[in-house]
Length: 378
Ligand SMILES: Cc1ncc(COP(=O)(O)O)c(C=O)c1O
Image 1: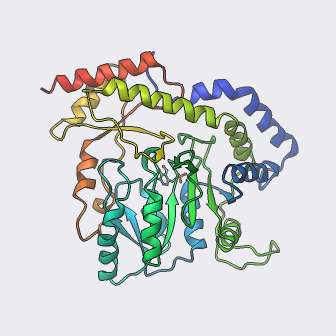
Image 2: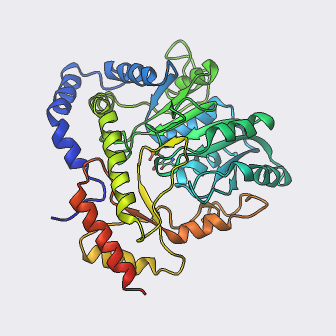
């Protein structure tokens, strides 16, 4: 039996009758666009988040763009964002004509380092940008230190958007991700902790005006009437079918989060003396979107991956190339203190199989394959 990196089939087997019934209902009614389940999903998510406004949409990237539109981002604006992330974070900023300003992360969490935000702010100002905000990212499922980042943002008259594409389901001091900063964006991409069977996402905000703009912009900037346009928007709705699937998956989401936590704890024990396991901040829980370890600097990572593959163990690199080194993002400013840790992390990280249905025996096999690959290099 080959090992799955992410096992969506196990989840589907558990939920198939509910998903079939949910999809059937939409097919019977035929309200494919902004149908009943879209509103039901938004209400269910809002209840999880203490009444926060929820605007479902067509992807995590579109959620970021809708959030930025809600924050009234303009060309010439500068936004602090980590370089160690998936492209969509910086892309959502750049596509609106604003400029990402790449900031350094912390060694333990791989997330924005609150102590180094000033270095990025200065870099943005030096580049002549109108610095307006910070985009934090909950990389691999662990939220950034959102209270500390919020404090820096408030002191410097900046807003805070949390890119929780990977960290929805996590918390900081028992407060769920989705309730920090001015706006949160998440993704329902199939491989995410809460994923649909296509593309999807959502914007969360307590701010009435931001919610109103995001809601309008997901349907061509419409006003109170369908044919009144009050904003420049886009087509960014979540399909009714995907909302119906998400409602079924939401029923088992907390159970799956608990299972992911168990899997993470088992890995942590097994990895002792083998490789550096992920480290959680004391205040944080993680949704464990990915389980990313760090290999010693001098490891030949490709050889480790090849050897593990030979033993039937898939691995992945998130992310091999920091954003500030990408051809199209090289032109944007980077923190005055540089991004040497980001560059080192991109060379050291390795993602192991992670999903709620990973069994102990399989994890033992994964870690044994890793250990064998590392020992071969000694
Ligand atoms: C950190 C981060 N932000 C944004 C996104 C974009 O989400 P989507 O693929 O749904 O557009 C992703 C998706 O992988 C992500 O990992």
